[in-house]
Image (cartoon, rainbow, N blue to C red; front, side, top):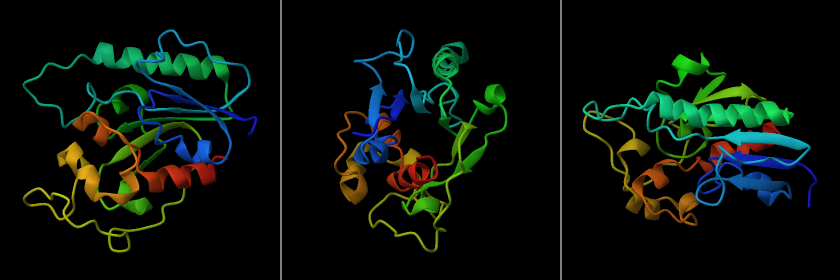
Length: 202
């Protein structure tokens, strides 16, 4: 077991921290219902922190007829930031789809689509924090396409935002994840990105 501790805050399936786990790091998944960022007490000597607070209140894909609760959304983000401050890790990153979180955290340090790391769909995602930038490995032309993924009218590429959890059966690199809701499926960190992020932030 590697003695380096990685906290995966609001980590859901643990897809972002999976490469760390596979390489012997001590990964602590801080996600509901087992763990809550609002009252979590981290151990000493945390090496790195990955944080993926829910995007519900910040997403530009949110139905315009549904009232946003930005205070609620930021309360989770602030809880993650407090853990980061308390731990003072060697690196940390906060992930969210491109949306309103930029209004609070400022310009992201890095943004990407899954296909830029070899996973054949789109979902513009932003990262804030203190971390080494992972190297993008593909373009849309070079990434492997996935037959059967839904492409919205007037679009050329499949978007994860338009996909339902049943689509997981079409994506080999995601089949081992268990998802109960469509939102769980769309929240899975693309494996190609997770792998390259790990390589840049060991």
